[in-house]
Length: 199
Ligand SMILES: Nc1ncnc2c1ncn2[C@@H]1O[C@H](COP(=O)(O)OP(=O)(O)OP(=O)(O)O)[C@@H](O)[C@H]1O
Ligand SMILES: [Mg+2]
Image (tube, rainbow, N blue to C red; front, side):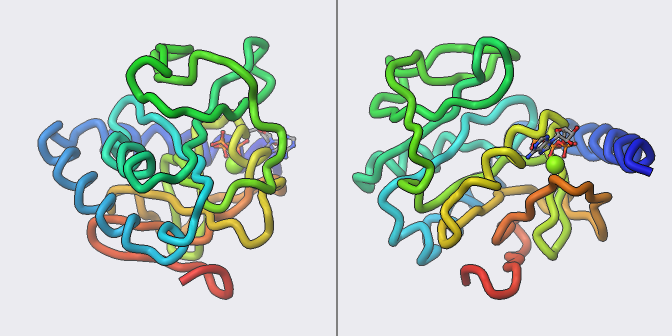
């Protein structure tokens, strides 16, 4: 049963990434800007003092505008760094997006190092990456389980928000026991809020 779900997930990942890879770069940039503007207008973002985000890779939503805005707004910015043994993500405070980052595994820009933040309860707002989402907040990631492990220990009232292109929205995501939904998904065409979380 669990094996079945895993292979359905793999197939869905492949097909959505293939579709997303077809978006021309200029379209991706324009959609990313529109989505970023919606996210920075959310109350949950405006109230946040500590924001965990990520640096995009491949054909993902481009997070550059968002992370620059976080710093400009005077909020603390945390970015993840994959542990050397790939057992999980360490979170580091970043104040300089040029000198503070270097290319890590798969070429993803990540913090150079320094002390990592152990206390997840400090985080108010999490920008969550992902491949596919459904309107009820279900999320399909890249298959590492890294964000499921991270989201399970977030503060209960911390907002978890995914930015995605509308082609990444599907009717249903094959879920397994460890999968943690996000509070909201923001696309260029719509906003999907999970009941009873943020608005
Ligand atoms: N909290 C957890 N504890 C232990 N294993 C976990 C946990 N969360 C996920 N996993 C395992 O990680 C593997 C990948 O999970 P899954 O397919 O859901 O990844 P994903 O959600 O696509 O990836 P990510 O969370 O990195 O974006 C699975 O074997 C899953 O059981
Ligand atoms: Mg998962």
